[in-house]
Amino acid sequence: MGKYVLGIDQSTQGTKALLFDEEGKLFCRSDLPHKQIVDNRGWVEHDPDEIYRNTVQVVKNLVEKAGIDKNELAAVGISNQRETAVCWEKETGKPVYNAIVWQCARGAAICEELEQQGYAPMIKEHTGLHLSPYFSAAKLAWIFRNVEGVKEQAQAGKIACGTVDSFLVHRLTGGKNFQTDYSNASRTQLFNIRTLKWDEEILALFGIDISCMAEVTDSDGDYGETDFEGFLEKPIPIRGVLGDSHGALFGQGCLKKGMIKATYGTGSSIMMNIGEKPVFTDLGVVTSLAWSMDGQVNYVLEGNINYTGAVITWLKDDVKLIASAAETDALAKAAAKEDHTYLVPAFSGLGAPYWDSRASAVLSGMTRTTGKAEIVRAALECIAYQITDIVHVMGEASGIEIGELRVDGGPTKNDYLMQFQSDQLGIPVRIPEAEELSGIGAAYAAGIALGIFDKKIFDKMSRTSYTSKLEEDVRRQRYEGWKDAVRMAMTK
Image 1 (tube, one colour):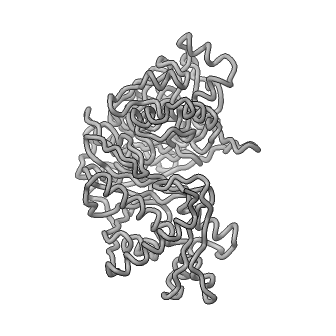
Image 2 (cartoon, rainbow, N blue to C red):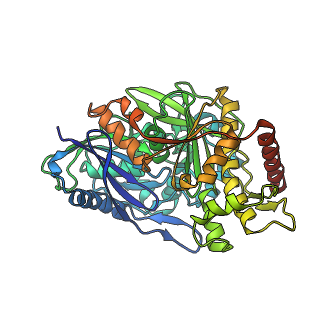
Image 3 (tube, rainbow, N blue to C red):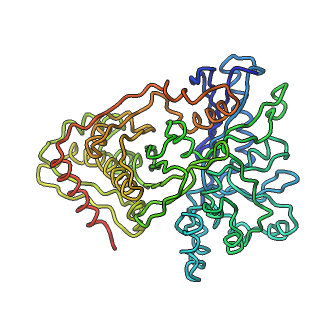
């Protein structure tokens, strides 16, 4: 067996190939971007063929860059952008339309129809998800309704549809394997997370035949073999498939009930492993599957925030208070301690746990002495406050006392933000040295499945920790000020 495990992270902006050695250390990385196809309606698409070509090419680039013998590759794991929907011909692998990206809301009218017909409660009960064009179901339904010939081909059993992982597996295996994993299936809004099967009632509502859907396989299961279009002399097994946020949860080592991670990106995904039984709640977070490993599923609570890292981009590009994100740490530390400015970044409404799409952004609590440093600090703090909101809700919904928060993403390099996050939660915040947690999760799942790694590999991960330095009454007072500011922003 070879000594390197390959991780492919197919994300919204591009595709990364990651090479891990026998100790699980990231040895080398290569990236390729793909085109973002956005029209004047705000519809967002990707070219699935370009994504596939880039996946094959980025592996070739990685092997060349690393200077290794390609025959030393032992296995591959894949993490992918979730909810993005693809339809293609089963026989040829040719897409019938561009991939409709998770950011694209063109399926809103389809969801509104179903809501008016009274199906939203049933869909949430079966899938754990609020009826929304964010998920794959409405995107696939849009293709079936609007792309000529697709519905007829589907009825003849000639169409495959699903998330990006299933398209890549199908193409990488030369059409032999049409599979997806439990984590990706649970984000389509077509999978019943109680019965752990495609939900035929919901498929019928969206006008999708079950024959179009992939076989659902363990996240560390057998997805066939690939030689990357003849690049390898001998094909290697695909043994790990996870949606990107689920990959990050696994990569963070959040394998036990009650463990929780937050990914700080443009927005944020906060996920809590709630164990082998689902928890359903009306408190503003959704229930999904974490993964299925060795035939056993784990469930998660998840909350998604629209604006976290994007708030820093707003400071830089729109209001031009900073020239780079790196300036925010020093400015926040220099801000007047007695200032109580709050920013609620509801630029496109509020996501979890409030779900108020009509909310407006608010900057409140300013005085005559409030200046650039205080506003920048409020922008950083709103990131931590939003994540605190969701962690509190998850603790309440699950009845689990949360001992620490594991975090990843670019903003975790900000010392002020990380300390403030720990101060607000009153628990340690732990940051791994490694950055590519989604790809790590998929690669580790593959490596563990084949016995190359064992689960002790997570204990070897180097981490930086922040612990709370704030008194409880001060923490409570500041958080109450945040909740008052949120109430100003909300319309309901």
